[in-house]
Length: 290
Ligand code: FAD
Image (cartoon, rainbow, N blue to C red; front, side, top):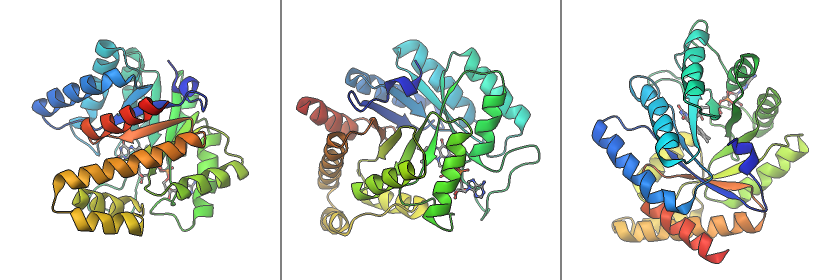
């Protein structure tokens, strides 16, 4: 199933993102999480692509396994980091042979210790080039990419970022998924600006339920997302009570999702961090309501 066909405001699809664990025990635990989330009937799940090393093979193995053994549509992420064109073609062939139909194509972050992104010789500098490459090769993938309601951390301005997103989409993307955000106003404003700029593909909001306050502070520092003052203060008050943090995080994300659905989003992509309880609670609440 091509994901572009399940992104529909009249029947929005929920999707879950996982990352490839480093150990076999981690993989076993992730597969249990997938099983726990399967009854929620996700439109698809996705597995991120690591910065290097063995977890990259695990992305291919995991999407193959999930699709084959659970029947859930599984999308592989793929980045430009450290790969030549030939290596990328190789990964694409493996994914195609495993009947993976959907890819999220990304540039990737600069490897640790590097301030700016430098492509390897024979590789790509921007996600747009990777999209163009996949379209030029003899594949038939449905392609997604990333977008940033609050602007990408490296960009000089949101206008520049949008201009680059438009070029990336025009090079052959079917949909985009947003970076996590905690204030829906950023998403609605972004969608409006994107539509005005002629970006017409579905823009799927990415939601991460807060389950650990320190972790969220780390993530938001890295990706530039803002925690609204009110939520930050509420979190500060309960930060030493792990259950209260989860309850607040789930409540906030549920309210966010309810508003997004009421305003006609085509789907919601959950950053699960390989855990099921928070996402299960939110999606169950949303389903109970519809
Ligand atoms: P690009 O679209 O290439 O943009 C990168 C920067 O370059 C932006 O600032 C953009 O404005 C600028 N730019 C783009 N084109 C041009 C141009 N022609 N000229 C000048 N500037 C330009 N990372 C991983 O390592 N693995 C993953 O699996 C992964 N999954 C992700 C999933 C989602 C939904 C999101 C939102 C992010 C994910 N990331 C992942 C993180 C992502 O790799 C980083 O945010 C990375 O820094 C940018 O990737 P991109 O594909 O958005 O890059």
